[in-house]
Image: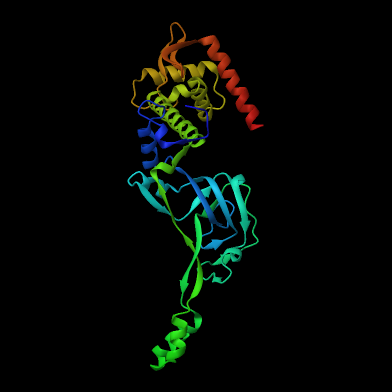
Length: 311
């Protein structure tokens, strides 16, 4: 494939990466949305920088370029050859032409269907949401509606005036949908890359989570540090030989619970050889050893750390 930002759906096959099936599945799962190539003369900007404010209208404009579709419309197009689309994201605002007020095109149309109209609001230089088409439709005039209310109230009305109002309806501005077909659908390569990166991130998190589940909690840190800290919590003035004796007694007791070595990190305390056998690092669950002299140094470091933290 050529290096481009946008690709037609038909350019993806069962041998490309991703495959066409991957894209369809990503849309179904809400991970990707489609783009579409359109050419419209009378689109209307929706107000709102980041989120479109419904029932609002800025300027009208012409546009030939790519638009982004909503997730709902994208998923519907997986099941249909074409779809009526009522709003879209203008992805290439630099291709906007002829921005103008709505009353330039529809001078007699009323705007009752829009809650807010800002004909002087400039077209955004960033991607923005828009109505794909703006037009006008016939609507009952105020005078005709007033006569209808009068008839409902009193049972009579001016027939001649009613006929005149009936055959001279007003015009009303409205947002119109356009039909998007499968041949117009495209995908944004940036969106694909973002989706693939997110998938890799989630896979990495899942693998890390499973690794943590399979690794003893005690090997995430140097276990003897935590064990000695717990002994100091109970016996602040304990000396190295006293701490050694406490650990030897606790490990040899074969109890189902330990007070200091709560994670059962120590496998054995050999009083004759003065060696502690324990699991030490994340990279290995094989027992490692600590002899008495290094143990004394560890106790000294933990005592100094404790005294520094409390001072």
